[in-house]
Length: 303
Length: 251
Image (cartoon, rainbow over all chains, first blue to last red; front, side, top):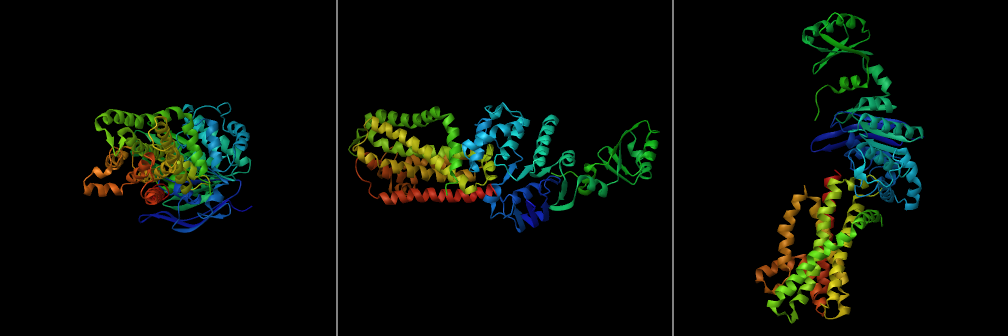
C-alpha cells in the first residue's frame, strides 16, 4: 500500500520566519502517526498545508495520491478532520450536525441517516441524537466532532490536539475510539502536547521543533535511542546543596523548576544516597517520551 | 458548479428554526417607518410628484428594507459563523472551498433580503400603494439585484471586521448616510447639486431609481444602467470579500 500522505522538503514562511523549514514526512497506511512539538513548532501549519488549505512556499505534498493544494477537493473527500477548536453548529442537534456535515461531502440525507446510529454508538453518544449541542459536555462535543469527521468513511483522519481541554475520563474515551479506528485500518495523523497520549496511541512519532523534524521513530525506539533508561526525580529542601553530589552518581542531571532529574542506567547508587537524605524526596521511574521530548526541545518555556 | 448549495442549505435550516420571529422582525421595522411617516408626515406634506406621500415612500422603504436585511445578515450573522462559531473553518476541512462558502453566504443573504422585499411588496399590494399591478412585478428583479448588491458589500465589510463593534462604523458612515441621501424619504433632486452628485454614486440611489417609477406606474429612465451599477457594486464587494477573507482565514 502507498503512503496516504507524503511530504517532501516542505517550507512555509510568514514574514521572514520559516514556520515550516524543510519537513519530509511519509506516514504508513493503517497506522497512527503523531506530530509532537512545543507551541509554535509548526505542527498545525503542517496539517493545514497537508490538507491544501494554505499554499506552501516550497516542497511537495501528496495526500491520498493527489498533489496539494491542486487536488484538495478530491483529496479532502477521503479525509476526516478533527480541528483544534470546537466548530460544531450550536443551532443544530447532534443528528443535524452530522446531516449538515455529510452534505458538504455530497452525501445525501438518507445515506447519512443510515450512518448516524453507528457513528453515535462509536462516539458514545447513542441516545443523544436529538440533543442540542450546547447541552453536551466538553468530552461529548469532542466525540461528536470525531464522529462528524468519520461521516465520509475517510481513509485518513487528521486530528489536531484531539484531547486538549478534556478531563482524564473523557481522554480515555477518545483514545479508545482512536484505537478502534486504527484497528479498522484507518490511518491517523495527530498532533498533541500530551506525551502519554502519543506514547499510547502512536506507532510512529515525529518530534518537530522550529519547523523541522528533529527525530522520528516508534515511541520505544525514541526512548531507547535518545535517553538513559532510568530517571530519579528529586525535590525538597536542600536540593541545591545535594546537586553536586548527584552529578557524580548518574550520567546526566537536569534542573527544571524545583526538581532535579537524574538520568542513569543504574539508579541504585542514587537511591541509596537519597535514602540518607531525609529532607529530600524522590520518585524513581523508567524514562518516558516526555524525557526524550524535553531533552531534544529544551526546557525553556515557549509562547 | 453548485457546490456552494450545502452552505446555503445549512443557513436555511438554521433560519427555519426561528423563521416566524425572524420574518416578523424583518417586517416590523420598515413597516413602522413606512406607515408612521407615510400617514403621519404625509398629512402635512400633501402630494409629492403627484402622489400621496405614503405611495411615494413605499418604493424607498422596499429598497431600504432589502438593503438592511442583506447587510445585517452578512455583517452580524456571517461574522458569527466565520469568527465565533468557526462554521467556515469546519466547512473548509471538507471538499468545499472558500469560494463555495462565500457564494453560499452571498446567495443566502440575498435570499433573506428577497424575503424582506417580498414582505414589503405584499404590504404595497395589500394597501394598494401602486399604480399598475403588472408594473410592480418588475420590482421582483429589482429586489433581487438590490439584495445581491448589499450582500456582496456586506461580505467585504465582514472580511475586515475584527469584532462586532466594527460594524457600527459601516452603519454610521455608510448605511445611515445612504438612507438619508438616496431618496428613500424625499426625491433626490431636492438636494443641492454637490450633494446630489455624491448621492447619485450610492448604490441605494440606483435601487430606488428602479423601484420608485415601477411602483408609481411608469418605466425607469435608465433601467440597464441602474441594474448594472447594482450588480457591479455587489460583484466587486463579493470579489473583495473573497480575496480579503482568503487572506484572513487561509494564510
